[in-house]
Length: 414
Ligand SMILES: *Cc1c(COP(=O)(O)O)cnc(C)c1O
Image (cartoon, rainbow, N blue to C red):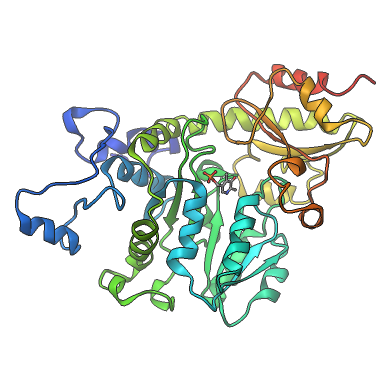
């Protein structure tokens, strides 16, 4: 009854748990806290371990509550299958742990979430070469390719400066070269954008953000869109080549990344994230219109030096965002004029909370250079377009007029 081709986004997500039999008719998938799964017949246990029969082995590799969330995410992204992890970073790390070997090369957008940037630096010290490029320009991506390139990694709208990767052209480039194209969809979410539509092979979502949406649970996911030809990928171990070719990637990621490294999502967190996901579309509609209203007000004020939001016609990739995304997202960043101190400004806000998260129902603000991008130093910040006074705003679902007034009144008296 919930064919994603037939029903809308929210209808599909709300009713997805009822596609498989649910204990006692519970409307929510129950929270299964059992680590082990017992079988009456020992041969059945062996068949499950050998992959000859579906079933659960041990909580680190799979859990029924987590599987229900994985099915929801697969529907959201119109994919082939999904693996959940304990955090968004664990999902991104799984790419490195499960799919890359020493000597491989990765081309990554230079405009990245700070911790992903830090992760790629770690990987670079472990024998995988990473090139950081301006992903708003497909030519920069193409120029960085080498015969050892395995993966091209980009974010949709970069956190926090909102540069938008040239998603479609990079997808075409990856298809021409047979490269695995990985898109971190966290900033857009599958409601605003499906990376499958531009040729992504794997989609990353930090479930912590818009999908869970309430800042009460961490989680991450990798969705295989079914577009990538794993048969041509050189790093698949023979053990994972027993299933159909389109399952090779997920099979290896489940074993080599989830099972061996153990960044598994807990069932309680999976439940919180699944409940949050039911209202994602409603929350995002409000958040995107709130973000546009506040960004417009700030841009019109002379005490503000710059506003970075793809919904503003002044944004360099505004036309691209309009073409690709349903709306422009819940996050923007802005720079105050030099004579307005960014800490004083933040302290004058009455509603927006200084805190490091995004996609929450509450509006959160953070001085980027002094917190989440502090460790990397001024030089690297400058290369990523991060001004020292940059404030990142994650807009919540508060009433629009209240937010516009809060951000306006905090601008110092004229
Ligand atoms: C937050 C975030 C992550 C990491 O997610 P966590 O759940 O915090 O580990 C990855 N990518 C982007 C774009 C993010 O905003």
